[in-house]
Amino acid sequence: MAGIKALVGLSFSGAIGLTFLLLSCALEQYGVYWPLFVLFFYVLAPIPTFISRRLSDDSDVASNACRELAYFLTTGIVVSAFALPIIMARRAVIQLGACGLVMAGNIVIFVTILGFFLGFGGGDDFS
Image 1 (cartoon, rainbow, N blue to C red):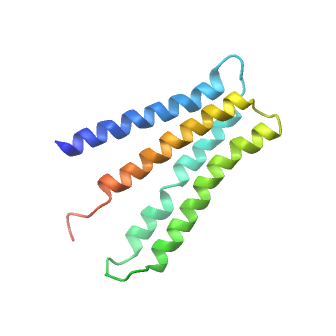
Image 2: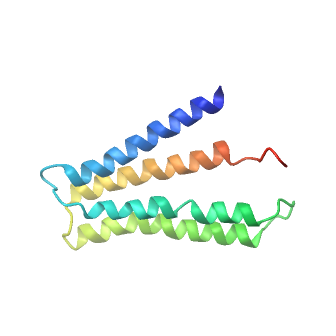
């Protein structure tokens, strides 16, 4: 039952994050859809971690090179997701209010992705 509550909570927080992102695009005073490019980063962020968990063995080694590379790539993707709206706001492609809504959506979505990995990524049934 705890897994269902966690899944419902994660889906609710994901919906809130996407609502922030869509508000940054669809509100009448902003009116441009350039912030939707952040969706690519939402899709790309968990991929290195999924691949590293699939490829790496679960030994007791303190540092696993594959997992460290995955953390590095994920960090680069997350930083890029925060940098893109800032650059667009500096170049006057989007307004500062839209940039703030995208930042709020980024925080909520990436905390949701982190919550998924902490809640459901602990162990497999086969280990």
